[in-house]
Length: 261
Ligand SMILES: *[C@@H]1O[C@H](CO)[C@@H](O)[C@H](O)[C@H]1NC(C)=O
Ligand SMILES: *[C@@H]1O[C@H](CO)[C@@H](O)[C@H](O)[C@H]1NC(C)=O
Image 1 (cartoon, rainbow, N blue to C red):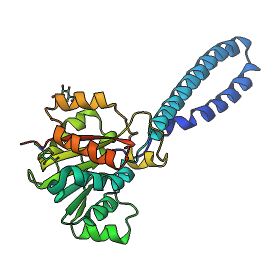
Image 2: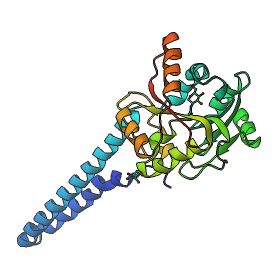
Image 3: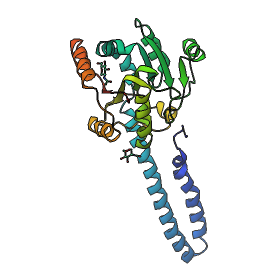
Image 4: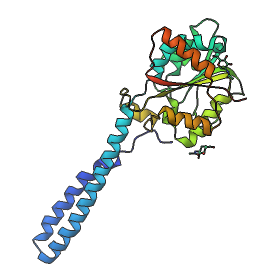
């Protein structure tokens, strides 16, 4: 799995300059040869430029998508009290899946009568002492969410996933989302970015390997139907009510799914 963006296109422009030098040198020797070389050279240069600009526009498109925002984790810190109202006792044993899970797990653990575990989908490059402690106790694990989670069915009452799914292609989502619903007994909460929402850090491209793809709520709802996952209307209603009471407007899309039985 590649975690680095492809930067090979960057050098195509400078590569065409030595070729220009050779062209001028040859043209003094034979006019016919020079015409042929100019034509071939022009074609090559056009080819290079076409390629080069193609590469650049791909990069810009991915950066734009990236700037579309990845920060549902920050959002989650404010959402926890609202989720607690919506889920009540179903928050007793929570699994959080997503980047920076150490800080999310630490915050959930502050809630009364709540146990919490975390799955960090990416390498923990700069884990602080608190995070290293959570990992050594087995509370937080580093695991690739493209593969089945190392937990038995219904190991947790509630599973909350933030940010991680925006980086997965539909092929992996097809397996990962049902697997998240499998390890929950009372529900799965999905936090996903809004398409076109302006936030996030460019530096994250190298960490996640693949730019985030922000899908509309109609895309997600179609996806849930295709994968036979049902939304939990009760949880949804309670969540909306609790959010309205605190005048809270989420900057992320929040979906409440029933667990798989
Ligand atoms: C995902 O699963 C659905 C339903 O099983 C299927 O229609 C769709 O083609 C799958 N998508 C991919 C990318 O595998
Ligand atoms: C739906 O959510 C409520 C919490 O609002 C929870 O108590 C219930 O178990 C959930 N239902 C299903 C079928 O997951």
